[in-house]
Length: 490
Image 1 (spheres, helix red, strand yellow):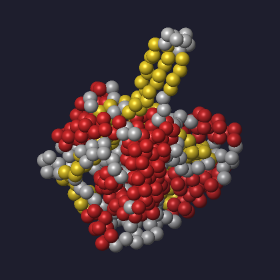
Image 2: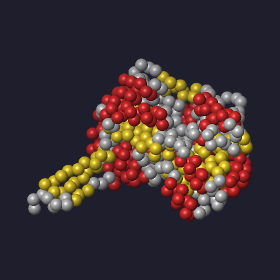
Image 3: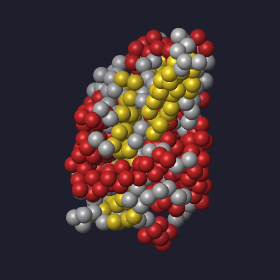
Image 4: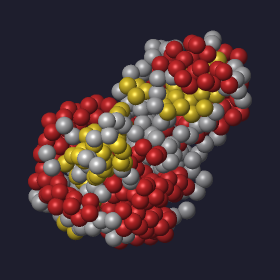
């Protein structure tokens, strides 16, 4: 359990300015924005609030730094990332506490995110020295082909509040490995973690201007000029589908390379031959990681009739045993939702489902008092056409719909415009392969509730995004391929 002194010390140590060109500064108009503790509703601190002019300064700094980081030997870029990896582990307790204070997740889970985030640094430190090219003879023998992979150029990143460190390292690490300078705008709800990470990279030796951090409450006014300017050549966004579409349209003005990790509406399928206890364990991970505030969170539970009663009872028992509270307190499993808007959305979705005929097995009502808390909730008999089955919940609610067959579950899972991830529990190999091949999603958790891994490609299809982050293809998003034709007369 942390003390008020611990919290104050960690907050006081975080730079609260804009990080531009390797130095900390205030916004050009002196504007600041409040950062709130979602567990209490109280203000933690204030940070600089960037103007459009500040955004253009950050872009100019990245553009000026681009030749330096591009020319840096791959081993040097690799070592910077590796030193940053080590520093994250040295500072893990303070970073985790900072994340808990501004985002709400329990301290133990915040430490898990620091470890997860650090793995992107380690993975891409190893990829930095493996950027390759090619040489071949033309089919007619008259020409030689030389292919070179080079940095795409200045990158612009926009990250969400739910994983304030990992969503940053997942973008920044491959950019540094490839030799790209960047500008990143963290979510206004959780800027502190990214500001602390900027200091980590500076301490690790990243050149001035290679990373610039701008906090902005008016994101549209600040980001649009950057995207339309032309000096940035790559945009990567993690967040909602509507915002992603808007950014993509703005990036198209200069034909920027773009990667988007957008909304999810993950199904969790439990077939009648599944190991029910294993399925419940996987459901707890897929549903309750980050209080359900994750794009990969299980959103729709389709359970085959033969195991529906057992699965529902066991899941409700596990959900009901979780402890809700401020993430700094010992024994807490579930922290607050991010803000009042997020809490209201979850409450409205549950109320809509109950009004349509769903039954509450556990939870189902926001608790009184300060903070944005919603209890772990299991609903049964959820109508297929309820909003819960069509909108991303982003909260600790598991809506269960009973299906009669694997084909019914497959059809229901695919009946969405989203396609990020789906989960399937079955012990039948043929069923597993059939469903995995026919689910319309970029990722599938087969008999597991966790798919995210820095060594694996992360991303979706349909309106869940473009491109992949992580894995051996993650660095490709930050590299251009140049072809050189060499005349040969020997």
